[in-house]
Image (tube, rainbow, N blue to C red; front, top):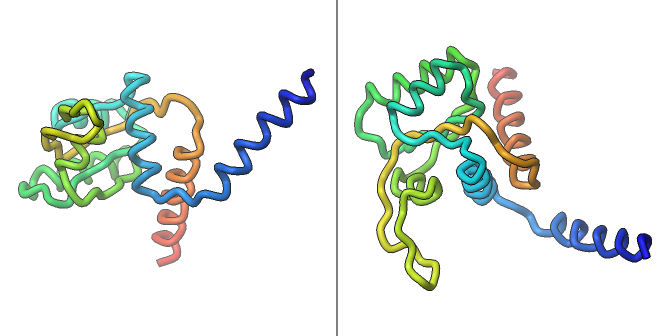
Length: 147
């Protein structure tokens, strides 16, 4: 009985490995898991507090943020605490991924609130998306150190 359960458990894992997960899809999943586990901070005030306390593990910053001082402050706090920064194209997308959106019955986003910064303080559980994202960040750090 236990042998059959082990075989069933191994089969879905092999199927997941065949599908290539993009970094943005991985980031979406990690943000959702962090939100569920109460490890996601959104907005300048919450993010600055988390970065200053050195409890942040990953920071997401929107590229379309118009305020240069805002970006400079977040980058400086991340550099001081040695926190990786992931740049996201749109603040509306980042807000939707962080749960700051109203969703229709069919699952489409009806209204998204824009946020320029989000910080993960607790990843939650170990998932494949988290490992994909951490591998990407490690490759970026290795590439930056070689220059």
